[in-house]
Length: 102
Image (cartoon, rainbow, N blue to C red):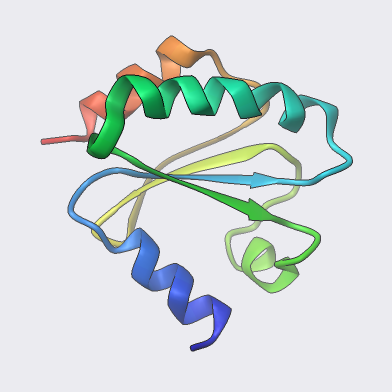
């Protein structure tokens, strides 16, 4: 299975899927890692969080027009619902996911 079709499968869930486009060399991306762990701990199975390393997945990053990292994209049922670049707070992310759970 190719990376693209696997990604399509992962984002096509009936619950919110938060995708973190990141890079190993990115300082703000490293800051987000513990925040994403806290979001997952707070929401549990209500959300899937997928981390995509843009250096290893350049075609996927290009497809979603990721120009800077970190970039977060929220999907549900394969549809993009929201996106934002930069560092975000835990509560912002939790509220965002909860708004799209229904």
